[in-house]
Length: 455
Image (cartoon, rainbow, N blue to C red; front, side, top):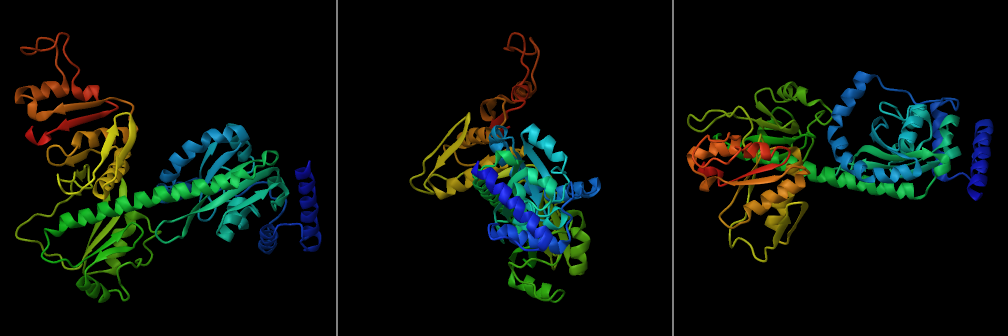
């Protein structure tokens, strides 16, 4: 009952503000400030829905925020079971308040379409007045807006809580995670949940960015052996120089002043990746630029200030095994570290590692496994390569079987039959009824080729 009275009071305060421009003291400070901004924007309180972005532009914006959506997906999946209980939906937006993804209770999602609380809806304050998404963007911090606190009358049937998502490197706002539902299902817990989800998404983005940056630097190290000098700028996907020698910086400053490690090259962060080549060629006209990507993942660029190669080595046209179609993992050698405790279970993606070197490898595998790329594990006998392979299988989320094959113990003339299958009677000792082959058995799972170097 108290909540109904509060809403009636807020509604009267809203009407007073519309009539006289004065905000009664009972209105929360954040809401009052937002109402005044909406008045300055000349937002109509009769607006019945947020504006929708054109479909082609929405597709472009969603592509630009692919990493954000990818990191938000597992968070939304885990939290979705809570949405049905409160008839609520989760919303992911970019930094402007444009909705790029939704998930939750079907009733809330259907109702949201009436006010364009859906893909392509623009929910900045300048678009649709006070709301948790737009106000969180404007204030750059978490906020909850309930019922009559919304500026537009039709949106007042909703309650929403939102928290900004910040980039783990520089803290800039990348987007917003919001929880919305009918006003009668208001819960103060929604804001806490939105904040936890935001932190979780930021954490996943941090891991992903570090992994991609490590892949980029590994690519550079592989290329480096073919050049006579190290005059190269290594630039990550956000345009930040993550590695550069002093001489490379000096040469770069001959073409663009102010170049230094750690800085962001102008206009790269928001530039589509397919336009990087021409843009960087314009910035550094005498340099060679290698745009680096792997498995549909945009990594960055190498800017080679003096393109000289060792001997007659040929330029590698594609990315090396470390980041191309294969992720390479090196197991620590015996005696490399102390107190190493590593265990894993095939059906549980948990791997306990107290040693920092092992922990780093485990983190790399955990990030690589869901990307569905082959993984090459190298290490001496007894370092736990099969255990790590089983961990990769569990971390990948694949439902099929883990199928190991000791290649060193397999006769050369039988490897093809074991991998691709055979019919009954194909050779002496063939199994009755034949065999579908290990590749078929591992379909939907993981095929572990132990001692593959002996094939």
